[in-house]
Structures are given as structure tokens and as C-alpha cells.
Length: 259
Image (cartoon, rainbow, N blue to C red):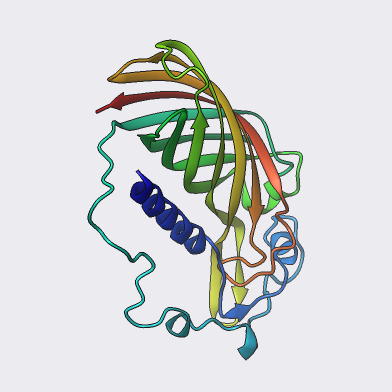
């Protein structure tokens, strides 16, 4: 069981690293880009296109030495022989961030039943974010953005043996990757920028109830308040002074098979 948890943690940490965004170009502030992408903007839609200074450039080859395996150790022993759960869940938001009025999406999760009262799930999902028509972001990127997420969720079942209406509480941590299209394309040097991305971190708690939890089937509902913390630079090289911390409260329906 310990080996499975370590492997899941390694994969999730690599996912978090992959969700950070950046560019070798410096193209000014994202708020300026959002303003120039609006239909009512008068004037040029051109943004700066300068190379990053040398001390800000990444060198991945130096960071990851040759033959450096992030997970080492004895691969034999400590196998996980317990039940696995494959679950699908669909969620919709009750309330949300200042930029988006609604989040709807689908997640897939692989669950491991821990020793005692704690379960561990590895999840990944895709979500639609509907922009708030009363926020300026609606004029800059249109009706929606797309959010990808992946991470770990831990659950504590205080009444493990209950087959019906088994409550639980837990926490989530993961990486996020948000992408959107500008309402009008921008120009930067010889490039035309139609869309952009920004990565970040998600932190949340969850509380739910398994309406049915047998040896082979699980059906339940979950309440999930979650906060998103975005990185300081977008994929196209804009300084993220636009998207601050935001969050949603989602209600999720979940169903899974246990094998």
C-alpha cells in the first residue's frame, strides 16, 4: 500500500510541475492583453514581444541530470492487493469566482481502499467555465474557458462498515490548467496570439455520503468547496496580473465499480 501511495504522489507532483506555464518571451501584462482583445478597444492590438532576461530562462537539461530516476528503491514487495475502484463523477457549481459564474465538468477517479478508515483517489477531469457577463472578462474572452485538473483526494470514513448512507470527509490537492480564446487576436512581433493558457494549484475540502457502498458498487453525492491559485505567467508570456485566487463550491454525483 505504501508503494502505491508513493507512486501516486510522484505522478501527482509531476502533474503539478507540468501545469505551470511560462514562455521564453515577455509580452507585458495579461490585463493589458485582455483590454486590447475587447471588441470596444480602439487602437492597436499589438503587445510587447521581448525575450526574457537570461537569468529567468529555464534549463531543464541541467535540472534533470542524466539517469536520474525520481522513484528508486526495491520494486519487489509491498504490493497492493486490496480492492480498486473506477469512478465517474459529474459536478455543477452552486457559486463561484468573480470571473466565472458556473463550472460544470466530468472527472474520472481511481480509488485505493486504505488500511483503516482512509481511502485515496487519483482523479483527473475536464470542466467548462462560463464567464460572468457582468465581469470585464466576458468582453475579452467571450462566453467560456476550459479547465483541466488532476490530483489526489483523501477520504476519511468514520463508519467504514455502513452499506447505506455512509458519510465521509476529506481533502483534495491537484494541478490545474486553464485555457481560453481571446475575443480578438493579438499581435506580438511576427506572431498572432489567438488563445492563451495559465496553470496553477487547486486546494479543496470535500464532504459527502455514499448512498450505496457494497463490495462491487458505489453511488454517492459530494459537496466540494475548492480554491484555484494561478501561476504568475501565462503560456504566451504575459505576466498574470489578471486572474487572482478564485474558487467554486460544486455538487458532484458519483458512481463507481469496485473490483
